Length: 353
Image (tube, rainbow, N blue to C red; front, top):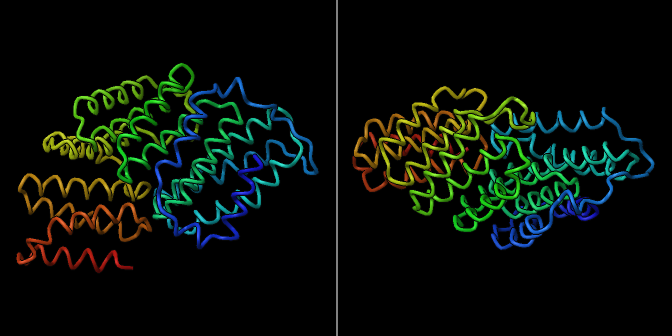
């Protein structure tokens, strides 16, 4: 807990240096090993604390509201939106004083739990914005908070998020290990949606590594767990729906070269609201565009690409924009085609801001 508070203060004091840092997958190794090796529930210290300020359910509700608002803003406007910075400030100015206050054992566990999710949300937003060093540190602190709370379910969710960040930064092997570890550690404890999310992260990493059978098996497991959800999943998993799996499955099959399957999954994902999940829909359309292009269908590819640009122009997300940049790079050798040139020019102009 003291380490997390010190880190939040460090970010505030030396933000510019921290945000320039790069991603180092090895930084995840020790915290992941610690979390996997030692049962969280068996090692978690007593959460009761005595300090100057009394902390109760109202304060916890305030932090959970901040989590939900940040998640919605992140989905609609990307990790670079202003709300991400305000939640980072919330960790330092609101959560840290609460952690040093007075609370019962139960309130303490809940406080550590919500603080872990706050740190995870900020970490993912930082990753989405391209601030990889800061993102890793927030995610590591989130895992430490989950471990301190003795909450294996929250820890599995955080570790699955770390897996996603690792594969997206070009480390699918390490990402597979983290996702598998999250699942195995939590399979007798966590809710169906949390287990499904871990398997989905594993499927994405396998696909990026070109491991088709393993990716297919993990994706099927993700679907099976989600189908078994009973409504008792934590509220912070409400966003996780069949459309979310379909969106990721589109990219999984694109990576595996399964064009028809990728486009079929894309049709299943079309029900996802672009108003609420702007970034996810924009990314899916960019993936569909690249899939059409691989299949030799330039007209469909350019149409999906333009719709992707129209959505992502409103999103502050280095990660999402990278999908469009990959698309324009693929098209660049064909720029003599007026329609291709017009699309590349349009994409560069719309995303430049």
